[in-house]
Amino acid sequence: MRKLHDDFRLRFYRNFLRIARFPIVPIAIVICMSVFLIAATFESHQLRNSFRQTTPRKTIIIITPTYRRNTRLADLTRMANTIRQIPDLHWIVIEDGETRVTAVERMLNRTGLPFTYIPAKTKPGYPRRGWYQRDTALGYLRNYTDRITRGSREAVVYFGDDDNAYDLRLFDEYIRKVKKIGVWGVGLVGGVLVESPAVKDNKVVGWNVNWFAKRKFATDMAGFAVHLNVILNNTAVFGSSCKRGAGAPETCLLEDLGLTRDDLEPFGFNSESRELYVWHTKTLQGKYDKSKMELHGFVVE
Image (cartoon, rainbow, N blue to C red):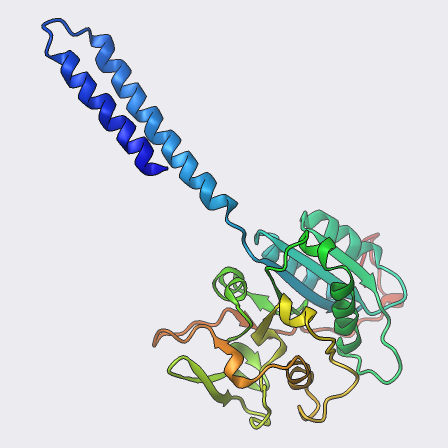
């Protein structure tokens, strides 16, 4: 397409030179030629940009379990203000409760993001750490895939907790580029400043973690993302326990999805100066007795 525009401009210029041999060449011709060349160049750029925009981009599906606490609205707001800047993203938020919380639903509506908000109270036998909520989200995703992805299967699933800190680059430089399963370093997790895969020759050969490094997938929940097809081609869930992971759920899910260490795609290891794009932060929760405090009409949890 660009060649066609360039050829047309070249022919026009040659014809102009033929006309210019005559003794009288109105200034208007020069002006018209300049305007034409500018317009043609602009149109060429527009067409190329249009072509780029029609190239499909993978959808990012973020699954976030959440529960009532006095820091929850602050945490969710901070996360929302980050991910609302990411195009082609669907946010699945699962409430640990019998009903949706009005303040949360209002906040989700304000983001302008496509979202799904589902109440799912933790069932007996499950840890109260989002396990059941993540399983609920996986079930919803498998049953209503087309509703979320608009019929596409080019999507990546990421389990993003509501109290983590996220660099915008995590989404486009890591998550959106995942082909099967991507892994990367996470800050402030497991009692250490950094946990990460151990990588040699762009292959994961182990885990740089402080706790139970012999786990097959010794990654933090914030440190991996899985292509949607891996999720849809399997019925694996987190379940209510994971002995193989010494109590941590990541190993059981990834093993049950049929993944192996050879499938792991490491991100962020191509330079000596490596940067973290996600931190497993925790907002400090004070001890408050709401019944003894004046709220001045404001909504708090």
